[in-house]
Image (tube, rainbow, N blue to C red; front, side, top):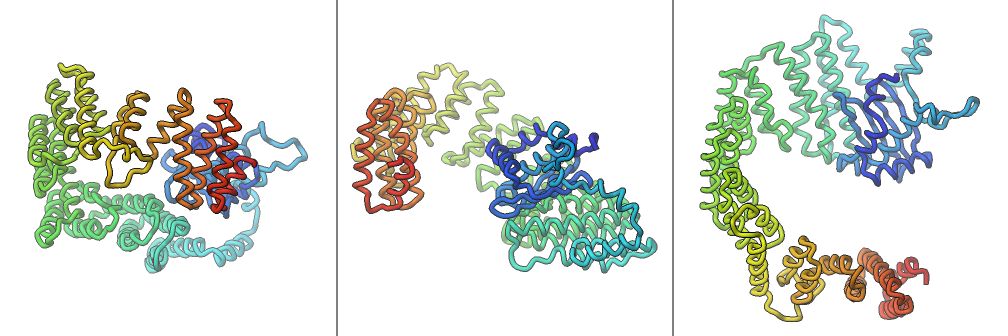
Length: 581
C-alpha cells in the first residue's frame, strides 16, 4: 500500500496545487465539520460522499499516472474545478493513512470509520464458501443494474468459443439511450454506465475477441455521437470516447478491415458529430487507411463540398487532417484559399507557411490580408505582422503598423500594443506617447464635445467620454492625469470607483464624494443586489471618515441616507446589519 500509485500521486502538495485557495480552505472546513460521510477505496480509486447543501459524489482516481477527479457539484461538473468536496475527500483519505493523526489505542479513529479499503475485506472473502459469495453477488446485482449488466456481459464470454453479442449490444443500447435532455447532475451517472461498457469491451478485446470488440466499439461510437448534443456537460464523456477510439484503432490494426469501408465509417463519424468530439479522427487512422483509403476519404469529403451549397466544417476538417498527416503544406494552403472572404483566412495561410519556415511567403500573405481588409479590427493579423517585422529587425515597419492600427482603433489595448512595437524605433517612446494621447483626446473630444454634463458615473450606451483615456493613465499608474481626465469629461462608473479606491490614501475627501454618489445611484436602482453593492461602498466611506477623524460626519451621512431612503425597507435592514445602529 505505501508504494501504490494513489499514495504517490494523491499528496497534500498535489491537492493544494489543484484547488483554488478558497476551495482548499472550505474543503478543510468540511472535513473538520464531519461532512465527509464515506470513502471507498478500491484499485487506485476513491469514491466518496460529502454532505454539503445536498449529498455530493466524489471520485478520485489514478489514470495514466495523473490524478483524475470528478464531483457531482456544479462547480466541478460545470467548470472542471477541483472543488471543496474533492478537497475534503482527499484530505480525509490522507488523514486516514497518517500515523501522526491516528487515535490512541482503544479509541476509534474517525477517519478510520470514514475510509473503507475494499482490499482489507479480501482475506475474509477468500475464507467464505463459494455458494455464500454467489448468493451475495446475485443479491447485489438485483439491486444494482450496472453490476447486473456487467455480470451478464462477463457471462456472455464465459464460453470462449462463441460470444453472445446481443447481450453487449443491449447493454450499449441501454447505456446510450437518452430521453429528453441530461442535466449536469445526471451526467456523472450517464458517464459511469459508459465507463462500464468501455471496460467490458476492453476486457473482450484482451480475451482475444478482436473482431467482436471492433464491431461493438463501432456500434457504441455511432450511438454516442447521436446523443452527445443532448448532454449538458460533454466533458465527462471525453474519457469513454477516447477509450472507445483507442480500442477500435487497436482492433483495426489487428483485423485489418477493408480500407474503403473504414474510410466510409470515419467519414460518417466526422460528418455526424454535432460537437466536434471526433473531428480530425481520420488522421489517427492514416497509416491504416494507406494511399487507397486516404484517397477514398478525400473523394468523399470533396464530393460533399461539391454537393452542398454551404461550406462544411466537418468535410474541411477531414481534408485538413489528411493534409496534416501527409505534411502537405501546399494542400493545407489550397484548402484555406477556398474562402478568402475575411482576414482570418489570410492569417491562417501566413501561419501555415511561417510554421514551415517559409517566412517570405508568410509575410506576403499577411501583408496582402491587411491590404485586402485595411479597416478590419484584426489584432491577431497585426500582431503577426509586427512580430515578423521585429524578427527581421524591420523596426520602423513594426512601429508604423502598430501606429496605423492605433490611429484606426484608439484605446488602451492598442496603446499597449504600440508601446511594445516602437521600443526599437528611432523615435523615442515619449514622442509616440504624446502623439497617441493627442489622438485619444481628439477622438473623444469629437464625439462628446466639452460639456460638463458628460461628467457622469453611468454614461448611456451611445454617449462616449474619457473612459479609455482614464484607463491608459491608470495603466501607466499616472493617477493625477487619470483623475484630471475623468474630471474633465467623465468616465464610466466602474472607473470612478477604481479611481476612488486608488485616490483614497492621499485624497480621501475626493474618494468620499465619489463613494457617496455611487452609493446613491445604487440605492435608487431598487433591488437587493444593488443594495448590497451600496453597502460595500458605504463601508469604504465609513473607513475614510474614521481615517479623517470625522466619525460624527459619517453618523450624519448614514442618518440622512436612512431618512432619504426610508421607504426602501430592504436597504434599511441591510444598513442596520452592516452598521449596527
